[in-house]
Length: 267
Image (cartoon, rainbow, N blue to C red; front, side, top):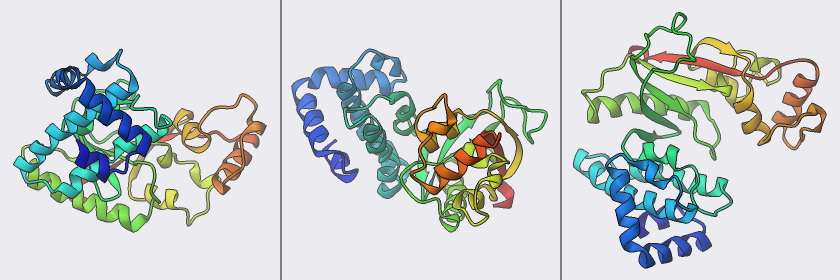
């Protein structure tokens, strides 16, 4: 646990709290971690955020053993688990609230390879328009996620996708998929109306075949402004993106999400 805590540069105050808790309630933490490792992450539902963090860190230690057995590098392990720090920071370094997301990391269902994250995913969402998609309901894909905290440089993303294809072929040859898949506000087809052509976001979206878009703006509002304002004129203008998106909305434009794919054989 301590190696991981130090590598991901967890907040010093939070680090000491979770180390103290892990020593004080060792039996409890190990018991909860055992349940999570067996797939019962619901046992953390009523736990406090520090306990959740201690348990997820213990699960991560177990995951590292699985990484080593598969021959996956420590660099990918640590880069993947760095999301723990990010989500603690998103919770004001009070511990881990979003354990449901981190369960993917410690269960070897998601990996950070270069700039992007990749998740084993079976498309069973009832909200997707399968008549427009190049795959059917229930088909396996690799879901692409864009972790926060780094610039979205086009060349880095290209390298990441190429490395991911090699990664899954090498370490999970039994996982059959045809497409990389992404749902994100970054892929919304109308973003060009308020972004510069040279923007990292538009360059990133060009990597995908944007199958369709929808005017569901919750994710865009959260990522750009953190929270929704009833009065659009109250949105801040601290960044160029905030300023241009605000002007776009005030002129009647709507933010949204795009659904995109990349055919594996074309990578």
